[in-house]
Amino acid sequence: MQLLGVERSKYFPVILRIQVLTAGASVMTLELLGSRLLAPYYGSTLFVWGSLIGVVMLGLSIGYWYGGKRADLNSSYSSFSLLIFGAGVYTLLLTILSADIFRFVLALNLGERYGPLAAAMMVLGIPSLLLGAVSPFAIKLSTASLARVGRTAGNIYSLSTVGSIIGTFGTAFILVPAFGVSTILYSLSTVLIVASLVGLANRFRAISVVVISISLVFSAAGQASTGGIIYQKDTLYHRLIVQDDAISGTRTLLLDNHFHSAMDLRDPDRIVFQYTKYFHLGLAFSPEIRTVLFIGGGGFSGPKQFLRDYPDMNVDVVEVDPEVIRVAKEYFRVPDDPRLRIFAEDGRTFLSKSDRIYDLIILDAYAKSYVPFHLMTREFHELAYSRMSDDGILISNMITSLTGRTSDLFRAELKTMEDVYSSIKIYPVSGEAGGIVQNVMVLAQKNGVKLHIDEVRENANNFVKVNLNDILERQYVTPIDNVGSVILTDDFAPVENFLNPLTGSVYLKEIVLSNNTIVTATLEVQPTFEPFTPNIQAIAQILIISVAGFVVLLFINFIYSSVKIKTQILRSFDWVDRHI
Image 1 (cartoon, rainbow, N blue to C red):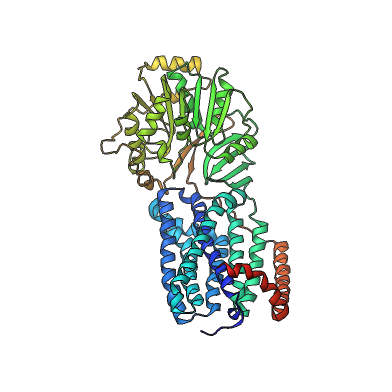
Image 2 (image 1 turned 30 degrees about the horizontal axis):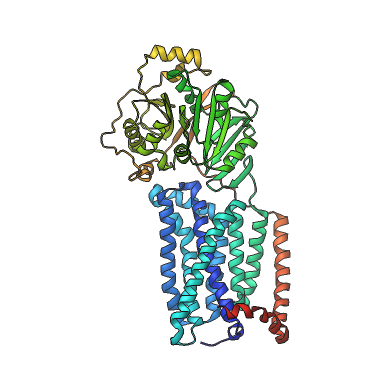
């Protein structure tokens, strides 16, 4: 191969290895951020992670093949740098156009099983291929003789793997908790393009300055808050949005674009989502409830109601996401009450470590497109059973239909609960139309004491602070056909297969208006798209930074052309050169 420019420098191996390290780190950063990009659309299911890992492995394997073949045909350093440059440009385009990419994939109606695969292919396929081609190409550029090719290959792949480790830990433990996904992606595109600059031809260097300028402006400007959004953040677990509706005066908490909680800003004590009223059913069957555990906090609608309505009640709330807890306190007026204890922990982990006995456990941790399977298995319910008082009750809020394919998960969970608890009762919030997807409340009793409906109504009238008369009438008494359903266990819980038919189905949610009228809203939940819209000021910033970038580039070229100054600069690499 013909050596030109930096390739003739004795410090070229150092520069090359830095680029390999950067490429390795970028692969894992993209994979982890891919999970956050897909979560608002497909949750964090096994299908999502299987798609991400599989696509990245596929892209890397093709990249290894392509990089080796390309290196044998034309092993120029400029061609090598173009691979990194291309990955950086694609990352920038992906960040800007991600909303449109996912709109397209959703329009294909591929479901929860194959939708994540198609999305992962579009998001990660090309950059994984380009970055995968870096290592074999670098081996070709680094190999001076066949006698050292094995050592050279080992060093290159070791560096790439070290980069992947840095990318994994850095993204998971530092970047995502501190910055938004879009900011990280914009910055990553800049890092990749900068890493490629030294080997690019002059025409690509000019293009790269413009691309970096665009990336920096978009990163600094972020996304414009639209549609009443007053707070948004990528937490360790969710894409979290707090949104105000000026017309209805309602504040809503969305987690991965699913409606989790709502509060009337003009009357914070008013129930907005009707299903939270069903939490009070436990007192109609066991009036002596004094200790309550909520698994899943959200906006704390249920816990706040219980603290307000029942002065003798102590409430524990377990919420896995610390940021959700902080947002609930700041935006949803969670009171500072000695009867309220809040734990930032997984619900099952909390129960396994706690020895406290509860009269009522409320399980409100499921979404339409994602459920934590470990909170649905027989082993979990056996654990919950052991933490319940003799007259204890568990109420589970599920989003499902009563019949049809969209009830597969519900019927499996019902069969699992029947294997543990003595008595099960079902309350569909939106009525008995079996095929509609809605909130379905499942009430499980530990002792199974049979109460006549008149006794239940009397308890409801005497001990419950909300009106349950209509709710009690909604008990679903038609036998559920779960003969062919499986009992969910820690060893076998194919919840992703059961969730798949729910994809694209209409979800009905009962909403209580300010005049206490109940309306049924059709929620075909679509992600909230917030594309950045450049204004005149942003365009001016792009132009200014681009011109400044060209000036800086010319200055760097002038400095580099000076042999004396170049030698002094390169001496700083001596230590690195001796240890690589």
